[in-house]
Length: 245
Image 1 (cartoon, rainbow, N blue to C red):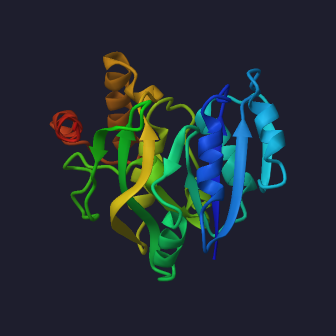
Image 2 (spheres, rainbow, N blue to C red):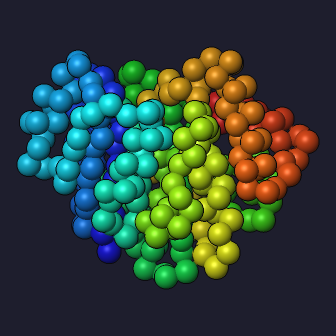
């Protein structure tokens, strides 16, 4: 079983190499690694050229944002399973992907997810995103998988139509919400840290972005013909506060 890892980057020359090395270091797995750069001008392209013979494919061209680029990656992927690892994020160890793929040996498993830690520039843990096994009240209670630690069958991504690019901060939440509610497939939770994520992403950049992200999460429920609980925001904020180290 092959897994495709997609990394989307833009002007990430100073941080991208550690991500590339983390993915390429994965052992005991049939790996396809695609990098989609948004037309960087800072040396990212030179870095990708140096890794050209180790990558399954890469492009550097303008896009309409991170989720548009991720959709392009899905369209080019050939793996049975797809993962998204941001530039400047790394896998927790060199057998993360092998561990994940093993879960998909069960044909009823449609998605696998695990825990994630945020780290600072010195690689010190600042936040621990611990999830829980999926249940009918998973999202109602304010839970959500961490997108870089979420792995899904490519057929389900294609079936659901990929990321909604009209959402600028929470399209990953909406896609996971949609995928995890597909009947007939079982999500599988791995209770350990799978990804180390560098703090400072767009959805965590100040309270204005946080509030906008929360509004888009609520919209995700509406887009999937479900009514969000009135206290959903409080539950999400409560979980985020508890995740602080």
